Length: 111
Length: 112
Image (cartoon, rainbow over all chains, first blue to last red; front, side, top):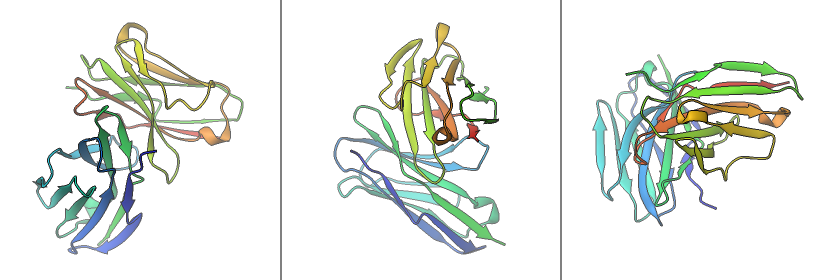
């Protein structure tokens, strides 16, 4: 059984704080890792598609790194804003193109 | 370009009733997927269509769930009869290639 784990499960930060979360995934049969931002009642929004070991991607104040050998990815948010409040999901895509999601990290940014 | 749409956005039914969820993928996307997220848990794969054919239905929980994609366009997921544990958010996604899936906003199903 392939497991994808995200931590922490939830966190509250103050506006302006920087934060990061972790996604752990199987290091074997890796094809890609996707990060999504999801607000309830909206479509999960793709943030990053990561495929290569050592990948670092950035989109505004949000960035992500990937280590396929040890099976983890970090998502960083610099200077958190209330509009960053959402659930952040990672999905491991195996060599058979199946998506396996983590449980998500629910972020609440307090003004 | 319109994204993936799902209907209804929210459904509340009683145990034993039937519910049908609909998904309209992005036009031209042959691949269509159904997923489910039970409260507090991970989003789990249910099944994958390529056009009108079921490519993989290994995630379907039991025979109370029936998915169809007639004509290879929109898809429906019927739950009959619904049980309490079927409550959750049902997502649909579509893709052109296997690389990247585009998700709909989900249907929140509550079974009382």
